[in-house]
Image (cartoon, rainbow, N blue to C red):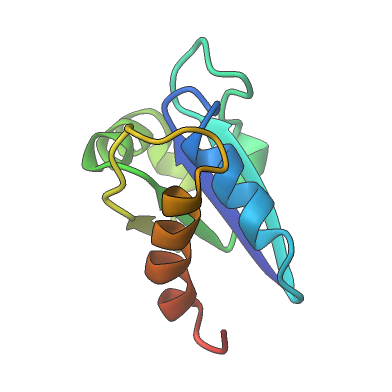
Length: 109
């Protein structure tokens, strides 16, 4: 079972979409959170420790994650998907983009 954590700024559009899409895949557990203090679900150290792979949507998210949570990122794969904040929740083009970027990184999908 691979545990995937998806992070964006506010945990309202991109990361919850990714969580929902990949939760449908057998062998994957998913969660999502936001890096801003006012996020719907702010990222926690528990979520970071739980995850096998952490996906961030933008380079700035990776920097913020490193600045604020460096001790909890040891031996963690943190992957930037380069997906801009221009999509709505569960927008078909966002779902397609997520699948095209994430599935090749997971291997057997």
